[in-house]
Length: 203
Length: 203
DNA sequence: GTCTATATATAGATAGAC
DNA sequence: GTCTATCTATATATAGAC
Image (tube, rainbow over all chains, first blue to last red; front, side, top):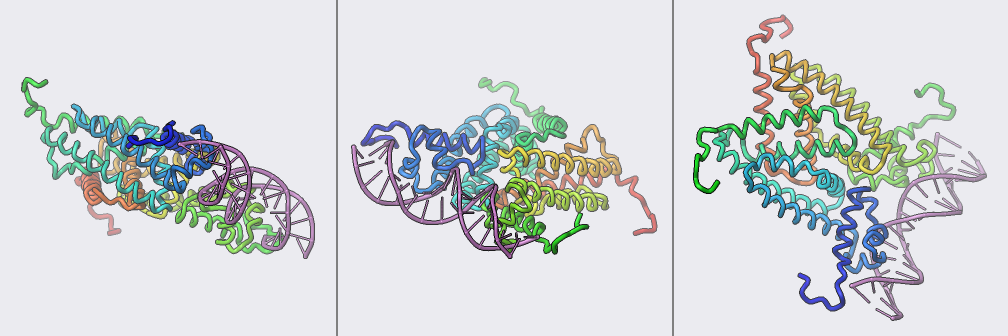
């Protein structure tokens, strides 16, 4: 809520969050020190503590900001014509998965981060599962045989795993797995060609 | 090679490696400082630098030790009667995946770790893929339709993803995905019941 | 092989001026 | 809202005694 600013708001807070995200992505969370993020945001170190009581608070805000942006994009994208493939490509974004690994590691030993990451992960799963449910149902897929939550997890996690490995230079088997997933997505997409709406006038 | 020890070998080096692994697992790599690991191993901080020139060298040794032990177990386990399920359960070990996340994060911004992790990951993939190849072939599965490397990655990565999530308290959809994977493994295992050896006398 | 002691750097965080 | 200056803790790493 940037409604009642007393002194001029030069966006330092926002720049700090963005700078922290970038440093975490490129060099890991351990490199995102108060001095480093302040320098990257063009402010002095002490200002970090004006906006964020502790560094963990800053990390949580980075996670929240990224989560909100991500959920926003997700909700929009997953309503398109091919939610399954959108789910796949969205989780193949190297920028996202890089930060995600950092937060995963952070969450393993920081309670506040863990709590936040858990909440975010569950919101993501709900949205993705809803989209997959609609997609599978529209294609006449048996939802008992292919539980939407399992399908959405499989697609998302596989895409992320490939990204995680790519980040450390591992590419062995990636082409084969990608091709395999493509084929499975094709099979699901073609599950029920007969009940495809012929002409509803809405395109 | 513990063959020619001048002074008494009290196993400090080994204890340092184990202590480091434990701290990394429980509190993350950032907590594995020279003082912390020394204390946990029952030695003084300076001794860390007698055995390991830098902390990164220690981390690499932790990775190597874990990798060797893991590959050893893997080679033994994957020759059993049900390699696909063994692959699944081996990658469901919370102790392994916890450390793995730490090294993944470390590898994102430490060249030596990245190189080591990549080498390890590729050795693991080769072993797992070989085992899956044998298993699928024995069951008469079409290897073009189910490329062994893709199948092995899918099984291993899915198991790990579930562990990674469990570690941060996320369990949403896990039961469904586990059940789904079980069913797929069943289908693969039952692919060719006709050529099942009837009686070899080994029961 | 293990120790004490220390050099040097940098971390998170606070006090108080402007 | 942003700064300078500083406190305190702790990091990696080295020198040299035993």
